[in-house]
Length: 291
Length: 321
Image (cartoon, rainbow over all chains, first blue to last red; front, side, top):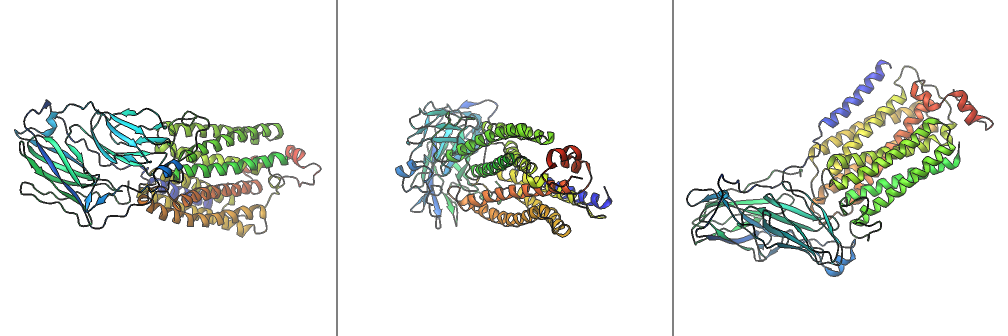
């Protein structure tokens, strides 16, 4: 092999190695997962009086218009739901639905952390239905180890595929007429995206927490979290998106009292300040161009 | 030369190209897990082909057909082909398609881990390369090709072509990794995109210089200039498709589902990449066939006496050097 040949070969190999070495390997960035309550050394149940956190979630500015979904690939979807539209931003009279609001952390009256307390896992399953080739509800919350009962109300086959970061991923087909699929997640995670590999437009989100202090905003933007022990908490409002948004707020709850916490998203997003509340700046996630 | 064998090899190569397109459609539609089981689809051989199951199970059906065709091709080769290295390549093709099937099953069972999915995509290209090589080796133009004089004092053309081939293969691996690193509703990792762009520059440089050198040094030799021209033309198309694929892919996270033109253009980019790869391998093999005196070239040309008796004799075929 002469000198020139060697030079060419070395240059080619070097260029190729340079290309490979700058690769990131396609690893996924971390999503908005959170182990929300750390768990104290000695867990006990709260037996004292409780209050509520309630409020309204608004959307400022003009919301993005829902997009029409092409259901041609499965005629059953088109027949049952001929005007199927995206439901990622459901705004009605300036109020935003499907925002997941939860108590992330805080201190209960008496000094213990909220994570030092335990709650019984409900025995009632939360239902997630596939109806009209659409998940209902779009956003739901469950407790760790609480059952989710997944049903198929369509005359077609669906495929349920949660993609958690901290829990075990699974993927299961559910034909029409099949019995409900019952699953549970054993680690807290906010929020787990759920997709249907048969119908790629179908999406849902499941928030899994160790406590029951969460709610999902309704069509009117209203939400209410009951059974909150008196104390000071960081409450998070989570909204889906290409990059999910989270808005935190400090809330103080009195025993047998109620605290108001309004959130807003959108073009000129703000959080409303009530006399007993303290504002915290919104957290931005610089994930442009990454996933 | 057996014309029937050559035609069948071409058929298998074409079917493999169709399979690569079918596989790319699965990825672009995010249909890889439309059925969680394998090798059956939802427990059936022939499930109802609706939704994304159409793409995934369709892909499996095409793959099964290609597998069957490869078995028939190997039987045909063993029956009609005397060159032992071609027979061995036929066995390799069968082993590769079996491995590819197993990788496909593994990636479904493991829920599409990046390494396995990328390996499945890469092996697909290698298998395509193998079937095309078999079509080349059984062709009349290969068997009847005449030795050419290599220009002295320059970089051997076959080495330039080999460098281009290796660069393209690495670029295919990067591209496969990039495609499987994010679904249609997620943005592609910036680092991988930049690496793939860098790889495109590398491919353009190496393949461009190899093809232009062929066109300059061996102007009248269609045996070499034809694949060189095809490879260069495909490279240009591929560069444009790459830009278009990136732009459409950039927009797809805002779409409600995988839509055209993103699906069509990304699939076309994969398919054109496969064609660039095989046209370069055809060019590379042919440069070894007619140029140079190294081991590989001699092996591809076969031992003169034995081959002349087998391939020449009475058909007016010029003797091999």
